[in-house]
Amino acid sequence: MKKLVAVLFGLLVVAAGFAAATTWVTTEVHGWREGNYGWALAVVGVKYDQQNPYTNYDILYRYGRGGLTTKGQSLEYYASYYYYYPDSNSVTTVTTVRESSSSPIAIEIVTATSGWPYI
Image (cartoon, rainbow, N blue to C red; front, side, top):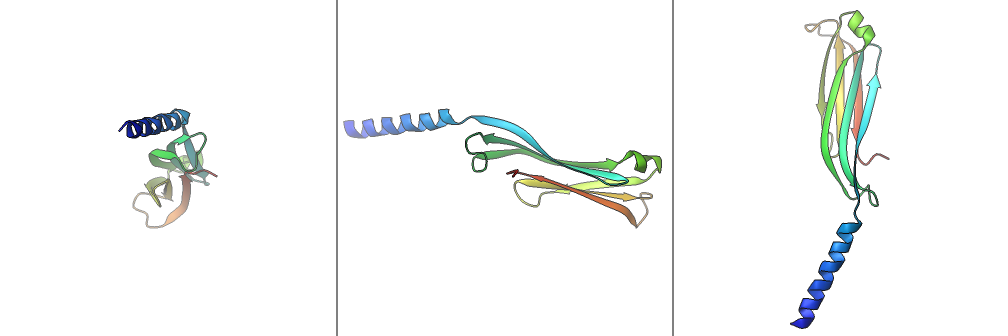
């Protein structure tokens, strides 16, 4: 029984040492694209272990935005955007620019992607 307690205590000490050695850092990875009339932004927030950033990490959030550039605004174009998750670690934003909200023809499509691990 004493040996079992000693072994379990030793494992607890080793596990605590590994936990204490982990230094977590948070960051954001941005994907940005700008066309003539529209822009797209994709953002991934991540918390990662400094010693093992590509294997020990957590994705905190993912989102996308899009809109018109100054040139697109001056021409009074219309922009819509959506974002989707191609996998569990990334986000892709697609911005579509049209002459008006009812126009069936896209003048420009701008796409931005961001993800982790960022290599």
